[in-house]
Length: 193
Image (cartoon, rainbow, N blue to C red; front, side, top):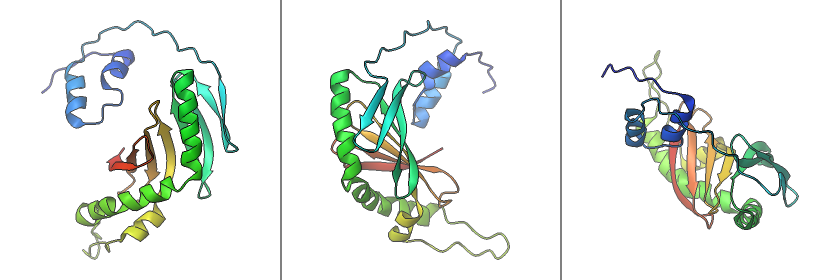
């Protein structure tokens, strides 16, 4: 439909922020009406800098209301963030993040998600060479795991996390989003962006 809707950044943030399902985005978009929101008070944090074992320091970013920093995983810089939470929850999340980073969680998660994502690639994302007309060769799970790498990990206050991976052009530049539960177990993976 050709309706013109006037809106503002605050309303977009309130109604569309982190809506991942298409129907939620559409519902949010359909509810836009240029509604004004009062500026929210910024959350007060006890510590502006937190230390993760010997890995790195995370600095509090007031704009995003989370702690952020970088670590190295498999010789790649990875953005790491922890969403704002109470000091008591933050202690629990920091302990979990420290455990997550030194354990084999990531390797296990990659193993569990690679079959699903390899199947998606081989069934729906093989390119056809415009000159020869030949279809791209299918990949296996091991090749898939060796090509992708983590770009960022976001931890929530309940210790669940989302990992965002570079696809090495397997899915034509889309990010791979991996959802992980509070025990470090793989839940699901999808394409994003």
